[in-house]
Each structure stands twice: as structure tokens, then as C-alpha cells.
Length: 423
Image (cartoon, one colour):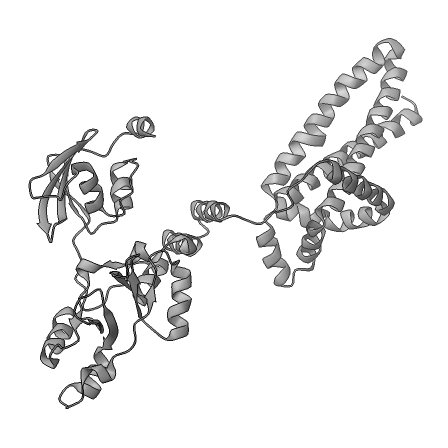
């Protein structure tokens, strides 16, 4: 073997290594975690800062990598052809060169380096960043020509420039972070609540009219004191004639500080009520309550009547989960197995939780378990009423104020096949 052939073989090896480098760099920059890299850069890591700055101008970066990769691949193919022709002749030499170089470039120049770079994206991107910065400077004229070409193509092909993350994409990120162990289940639930916070309406978290504890305008001080004592509430709505005409809110602290045991009228401590529509987003409601320094709002229906009330605590619970204080009565487990394949379910449970637990997929306009029961019975439920949904039998066992308070569900949660059929 001549010294010339030895030199060509060494050059060919170097070109294959460069091909692997460019392929790995392309994968590393396209797969790296920009948030993690940004945190490293903010912490004073100069290499991470350089890498992040290069990734910000991804078009120029990609153009440089592709130009470099194509140059070394074409050069390696040309040199390999010369070597194989000199060794095997012009008849079979080019064919052997094509087959061998295709395999070599695929294995050592593409697949292997890209697989390794994907598993260590940030590390390899930071390793290659200084070299890529030099190449970007050297290939500046070429990148400029490609940028002009890209602008021309954009005029011919309509491209959506919007790259902002959607809520569903953020939820996917949170789910992946939980699966990878970056956050625990509690943190994941809180982040989900924050992301979905703006989608929830006031009517979804309100205390309905039938459950509102309110007092008439001419109520005695003794009656108000009794309600504060028995309910444990710190605020009571006050109405004029009917609960559809709530005129203000009484605070327990003000009642005992300024009215109880004195001749002052109750109306002197009454704060004005805030009236909101049922469709108000709770994110807007939170800002409204903060601005007006209020803890309670009255939801008014389309006829001007009271549909329910919502408190600041209700809004905050949508972010951090249920908040229990010393006056709350903690309900028993929502789904309590009572044997023979039956479950006792309290109707205060969310309808979504019922559907999720039993794998139910049902098109409904109801927002509560009681509403769903009424839809299926087509009348106000009574004790003993029952209906069947697929293999599940629902029986009403307790009713108060024309509402189902407790049901028994007989049967095991639906199988996946049944879910797919319903969908």
C-alpha cells in the first residue's frame, strides 16, 4: 500500500468522525431540554450560556451543521471511490465503494452518534458548542444565502409561526415530569390545577342556593349568634324577603365586636355583596375578590335570582386542593366498598370522580351526581329508585330536599372494552 493510499485512508477516517460529530450535534441541539439549559446558564455556566445562545438562532445553527455534514459525506464518498477503484478496478470499484460507504456512514456517521447524542443531549451540545460557533462564523456567507432562500420559500409556502405552548402541551410536560420523578404526585396535581385554572367557571365551584345558609334582614341578634355558633361560618349572607334578594354580608368578627350586646342595628355592620354571573372564570373572580377585599360573591342567574354563592376559599381550593378547618365535617371515603361487589357513594362527590372510578363514559349535561341520576330516572329521585348503566346498577338510598344524598352502586368498574364501545 502506497503512502498516498495510507494518507487517503486516514483522511477518510477523519471525515467519518466529522460526519458522526455533525450528526450527533444536530440531534443534541434538537433534543436538548431548553429549560434545563437555561437554568444552567442562569447559574453561571458559560458553556451552557453559549449553547443556549446558539440554540436561540436554530436556523443558522442547523444550516451550518447540514452544510458541514454534507461536505464531509460527499468528500468521504469521493475519497472512498478513488481508493476502491485503485484497489479493485473501474468495473467493480465504484459499486463496492457505494455499498461499503453507505453502511459505514449509516452505522458510524448517522445512527450510532445520533442515538448516543439523544441520550446525553445537553452534555454533547455543550461539548460541541465552541466548535459550532467557529463554523457558524466561517460559513456566514453560506448561511446568509440560505436565509434569503428561506424567506423566498416562506412567501410561497404559508407557515404558522406560532410556537407558543398550549395548555394541553403544558399538561403533557407536567405528566412526563411526574413519570420521570422530577415532581411528586402532589406537585403534579397543583401544577395541573394552575394550568386548568382559567377554564373553570364560578358555577362549577359554587355552593348551590339550596345549601346556602342565609338570614333575613329582620332577624334577631340571638338567631345570628346561634347560626354562627352552629355552622362555624365566619360570614352569613343577609337577604330582604327572599334569598333571591341578598343585600349584604355579615362578618362574625364585626357582629361580636360592634353589635352583640349593644343597641346597634345589624345593618350597620353589613358589607355590600358582590354579584357575578355563573359563567365568570374563577381566575377573574379571584382578581375581583382581591381588588375589592372580599371573601364572598353571590352568583346571579339569568332571571336575577340567587343561584348560589362562591367564597375565596372555594377558589383557592381549586389550586391547592381541599382545605379543612376545625369547623368542617370531613366526609367518609367517597367510594366505600360494602361487600358483594357494591359501593356506597356520597352524592357530594364530583361527577367526574364517579365516572373516573367506574370507568364510565356518558354524554351528559349534568354537573353533579344528583343531576346525572335525574337524567337517567327522568324524575326527582326517591329512596329505592334504581337504574342500570351497562353492567352497573345505581340505587338511591338517601334523599334530602328532593336531592339524592347517597347511592349504592352494584358491580365492578367497567372494563376497557366497554369504555371503548361507549366512546
